[in-house]
Image (cartoon, rainbow, N blue to C red; front, side, top):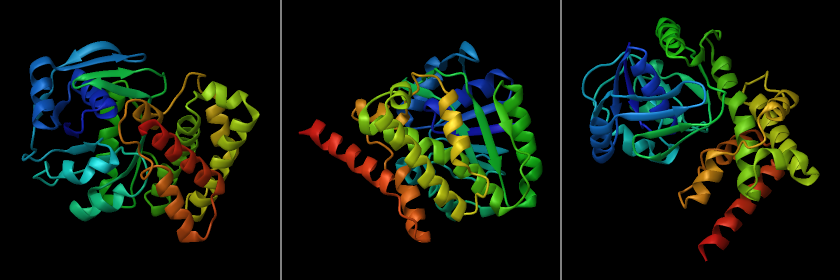
Length: 305
């Protein structure tokens, strides 16, 4: 496939490197300085599942030529600015951002039927431009669409991921509820992990083994599942989400926790904010999530003073 990747951070850089190594035609779209670094040094990937390698995809500051698929892997707050770098209409758009609200923006800017619902389960970071570290064995891309016209493209993109060593699922029914299921099945787990690790600055193992913190983890999951079900994700289940986090390794953290530690703006609006806004739409209270968000903000304010 001819694939463009917008945002070569931990997620985008990992996928761009893996797809390019597998023989796909890949172009990375990034800020001028980042594009120059990748053009000169390539993408240096260290992955627990894909190994250590350097890929040399083409890197540009603007995308003008048509592509079969555009993978969008920016942070949610940087999406509007990043989209200014896209001067074409991709045949398919796979957003892999945290949260929910980016879908509406992408469908406003690009052809709505081409924009999939998509998530990735991965723990990856970009310590510096062009350097990608993938530290956990799980790696799964899920995508869904309500539009029949996207079916063939999704299947082709899934095959490209599988050929690159990235597990992918695109066998959902073509319907709106499949989109909700894909988005909320990740969000209920990610939100609880991000909020608890960031509120208490502890890794998952200690959160699971400390009764008070585990209660917050389970409460955040239960509240998000209630909201997700109201949004049409009928199959999100608190026990399944808790079971997934119970099986995860003890040293699992979150990107929000790492952002706070590094002094970067955390995705509070994109992750718990999206859950709380959806809860308000349906009249569902989320007291645990609200309290965790307040704790995170207080920690950040104390650290800044």
